[in-house]
Length: 376
Image 1 (tube, one colour):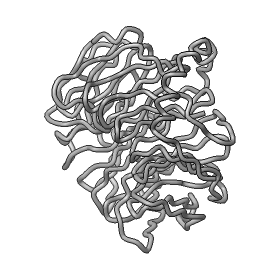
Image 2 (cartoon, rainbow, N blue to C red):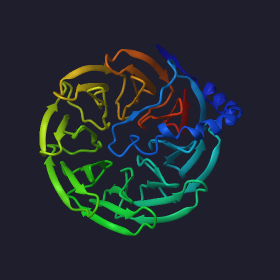
Image 3 (cartoon, one colour):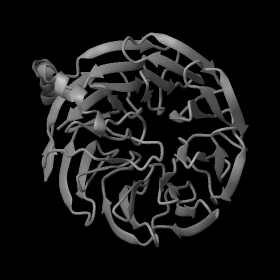
């Protein structure tokens, strides 16, 4: 089913949403299905226990002013998202009403997505600074300057916040104080977000390597050759990491053995920028070949594919047996995860590269024309 939403309708939804503020206490109570970081959890599998209505509609929209490439984090009844023009904003999940704005000078936040842990919001900016901000008030707690831009998203593990930088390092800072825990140098920019499994941070990089770095001390415990420049983040399930590369492949790696289990290369040779979601024995991700690909986790064989009208750089989310993903063609697509059957195509009118965040019966994501939109 294809649904087209006009900009007038979106603006009306934003204005009318203030009446929904009375639902805020209910939203704040639904912590079990919170989406507090990029891909929801430290293993980056992109799966939510929440369910969404059979057909999505716009509940509210917030005009952020410039492209929103950052994927939202949702915790405590609030949406936290980075904006290229201004910085970090917090919105009420029920109504879309602004709670606070944390200003960042210069070029603000690109693809780095917030992580919310123990009342602190962490996010990186395009000037290379990692910010720690009080989630309740929006006040700065501490910051750390890396050597250059940050597009990686922060992940908190073992009391440390981990984030990659284009300064060729994965950095670990104390989550409370910002004091350095360790810094691990790689052979190229670290674009992706680290995935955590069994005390090890697994990070892809522009040096074509997958590295396992021990969270406790920053020591490299495993290195795997990916065979290509990698911007996507690894998703981990059952000891296997799945990610795509700019060498037009998706690969699965047995983390314990450090062995590539399979490689998938579609007929159309385009890079993979989207990160995978893993559930039900499938790894599902978007490609710059304009397709959404569902691969069997054990073999890498395609289970189904679907052609959109533009690049798919958004990373899919899975909830209630459905897959939700944005496309550069301006649509949010909903598929049955097992079969790939199209459930809904909802047109938002502007390219979407941010990834969906799902909680409390709502899906939130940003658009390239500067909107944060809640669907439900």
